[in-house]
Structure formats: structure tokens, C-alpha cells
Amino acid sequence: CWVRFNPAKQCAYTSNAGADGSVSSISTVSGTYRLVESTAAGLNGPIDLMVSQDGQNLYVLSPGAGAPSSFGSGQPLIMVYAVGRDGGCGLTLVQAISNGFDPSFIQGNGVAGIAVYPGNP
Picture 1 (tube, rainbow, N blue to C red):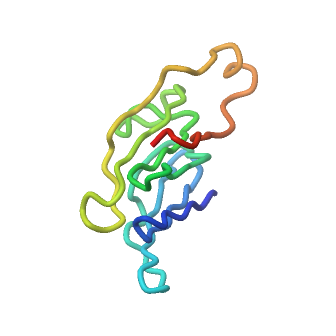
Picture 2 (picture 1 turned 120 degrees about the vertical axis):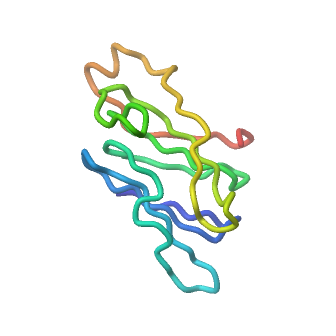
Picture 3 (picture 1 turned 90 degrees about the vertical axis):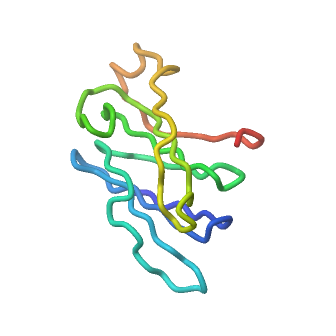
């Protein structure tokens, strides 16, 4: 499990790994913690997540997810979610990125983490 805080939206997100994994959203408004959605996004084994520099997007690495409706395809994806379009901590799927993974590395080692570089919102 990983936890990422989004100061721009006053939300926290946690990845819950496993075959029926998910991302949960938590509001941190006024210094209190309130579970907004236990399953803000359903994924197969999300292992890492990162908030964009501007706080508008959440990137989630799912090493064995297909599209959110077809878990377990074996294809690693970076799922991109818009954060807080509902005015709160909710997530809206924007894009599923499947390219850019080196197949020879994936077969031997699998994917292990995600990085968002400064200046790339």
C-alpha cells in the first residue's frame, strides 16, 4: 500500500494492492480524516501512485490491469485520473497508458514504481 497526499485538493489517496485492488480517497479538510470512497478506482494490484505537481491528476501504476472493467489481463498500465472534478476527492478516469514499457524488462522483472518529473503536470 502507498499513500499520497494532494495538498491542492486536501485529499489523500491509498493504493490497496491485490487482485481485487483499489484506490481509496480520503478527505483531509479542516485537519480531519474522512473516507470519501473505499473504492474510488478499481484496479488489479495497484502498486504505486503519484499526484501531479499541479494537483489535478493522480497517476496509478497497475502492473497487471487491463481496462478497469477487465481486471487481470496481464498488461501493465499507468492509469491517469482527474482529481476532484466533483468538487471533492473523487477520481475520474482520463487515460490508460500502456505504451512505454520495455517488454523484455517486464517479462523478467515486472514493473516496480512510477515517477512524475517536475514540470510535467
